[in-house]
Length: 351
Image (cartoon, rainbow, N blue to C red; front, side, top):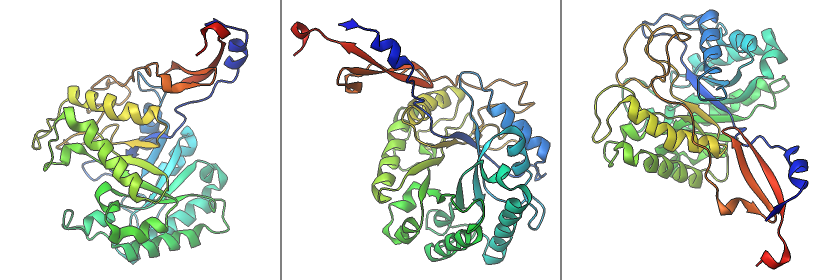
């Protein structure tokens, strides 16, 4: 095999493989129910961009448009995103009835009016609800009412009407829910009304399966593939996943930093390499309280001062003959960059 100057020329055609969205989920309040402020959101967003072993996680998924503790004041995460140039997957909480959803829409409209394109240019999508179908299912029934498919379809249409004619009119609407609800045909009307599908999947909680960390990757991708098959060709985003660093053992699933690292490599790194939009759960959840299980990449304390609990680097892609295209080879130059190298093969060596 003889490399020619075409290698040099093609190096100028570097493609940003792994250019999909990478972000974290961010709640509106701490564990003690204190609202996060502009400063808090800025601090979290900036720290996500500087995680060692990564090229930065630069997007934020929000669960609500409303500043915690207010009726419909715009959440301060919006200004924080503008200040830190963090992209946003907006969320409108949909499990508390129409009156509550009216407040979500009021806050969304206010954000568009208040911040204009400085805000809307950062929006990568809008999620109408979060796990609402799960909450009304037998598996998720509990104190939170959730919302059925007919209600969600109505909410989706209300959001489309709210953003029509605004600088957010081109935003893609989705819904976030557990993978099980998407494979349930009774929820197909929701899928029909969406631009993209947000899937939450946690093998740790799949207690009726062999859910040891060794099976975590297989369980996750089985859920992902079932979701893809059920969603009629619409893009599937992974909007929540992770493995806990501490907490109780669930069937065969043992929380630990070591196991979280294995899950990161088996699931997170593969999703990143495959250019799947991903919001990991979570950057830090030990904040004024100790949740169990805890999924935080970083422990409690000052985000800028504490180190991740496990290695966040991803192994380089292995050489793969399937990546040969004609006389070109897709080579991974770094965890975030790839190019196509072209080569000449003399006739006597072809065949």
